[in-house]
Length: 160
Image 1 (cartoon, rainbow, N blue to C red):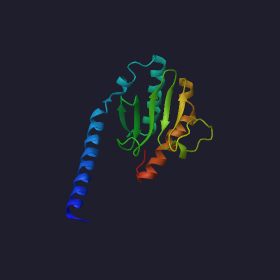
Image 2 (cartoon, rainbow, N blue to C red):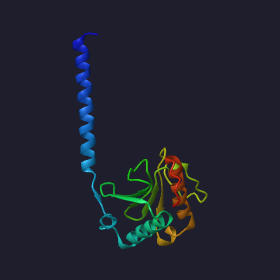
Image 3 (spheres, rainbow, N blue to C red):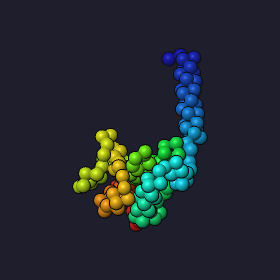
Image 4 (cartoon, one colour):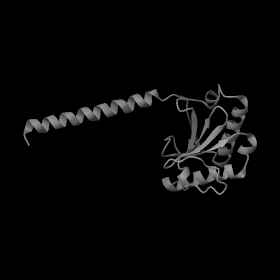
């Protein structure tokens, strides 16, 4: 291979790397973070109550949960760290007529009540239509199982 060809290949790789880095920076800058109240600002009051209750359940089970509200995703995620797909174990995502309680590794969770919906490789969610549905022990059990799964996957052995 000639020196010119090697140099051309190296320049091409550098350009591709620079473009990828630029897109990663732009993506991070475009992510709009906010508060839980901002997330629920335009949500029906009944659904906002459900979302608040789900948040309370998560925080009762894991008081040190890292909450990250991504307004662009219309969701709040909860985890051992801020990384959505690797450190988070669940999310709250208001919809028009219900609130999704989602699980990033939901396909791996035990679900004896068959509450989880979804057909993707990993993600699953529960459609929560009422406060009574949010209060079901099986909902809390899913959150607890998701937390255990993430701790095991990331080798976090600290207690809740």
